[in-house]
Image (cartoon, rainbow, N blue to C red; front, side, top):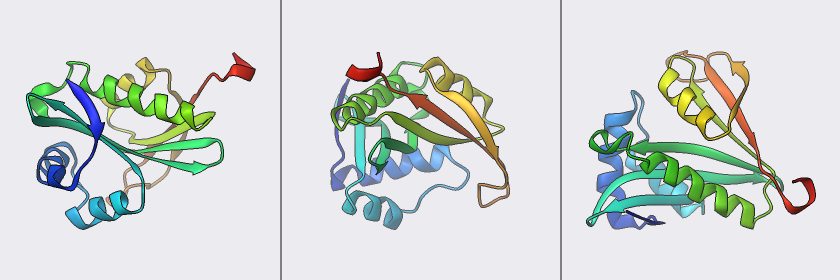
Length: 149
């Protein structure tokens, strides 16, 4: 598996993964806008097939934000998501980011467990975060830097 930067020809497969993974998937126009605005956008590729992706921002001087991550159903629980998150973390560290945050559906216990396994902690519940009214769990991970090992 290789992890590389997203390219526009990857959009069709990313959309397929997005639609199979989320009840309210981002449309192609939003994904293109996110890409054009300079968000971090990585894909995981196996045998020339996109099997997952991650999108993230550097929001403030010291905060990163994971916007979306998804893995093709056939490739889940095979470390694809873990490799995507860890690659994003390495990029955040290059920019001296100290904290990473993300939101996850409160009912998505599998995703919450996954993020906890990567060192994220539940910070608080964000009421009615999603368009359908579901709450989100705000999760944070503090990154170690040279000064705060």
